[in-house]
Amino acid sequence: LSGSFARYEFFQLRSSDVRTWFPPPKEMPALPGRDTIVVHVRAGDISGNTDLASLDGTHIQLPYWYYSRVLQLTQWQRVAIVTRNRKHETVRKLQKAFHATVHSGTVFRDFEFMRAAWKLVLSASSLCWFAALLGNASEVHYPHVGHFHVNNTNGNRFAVDDDPRWVYHDLKTRSFSLRFPDLHARP
Image (tube, rainbow, N blue to C red; front, side, top):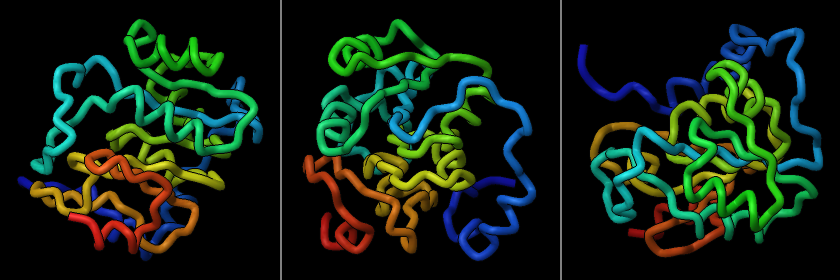
């Protein structure tokens, strides 16, 4: 079996069923409150690739300015960063600039923390994308870049086209706060 199977349309028609198949755990310590925006910084396994023009499906390390700009455009009282690499430069800069706390537990705990977010800023990662799909966030901020770009060449289709909670940020053109129809008007 070969191919890319991370496609929103596989989830779209059965989303309520899928959520019942993966209920949140009954007990989870220290979940984010409604006043907290949760930011996923994928760091460590993709640190070298920063080509924002790439559409070939490679994983891209998102720049600090993406996270910073989304946080500037969004209302919040607290910032919580979920990452595997607490020492990553982007994590340290966000911590300092936004007085953020850092959460780095097991993959399961990190997933559930993101899933419980009221507002969630995605990296280019299927882990946080699935957490957003299964969660009930009022806002999901999506980086329109690399394998998350609607025109990527690897067959993945992560973009959610029917949910107004999803806000798109085109990193290549630095266009922020877009809606899904806006993506098709862009190269």
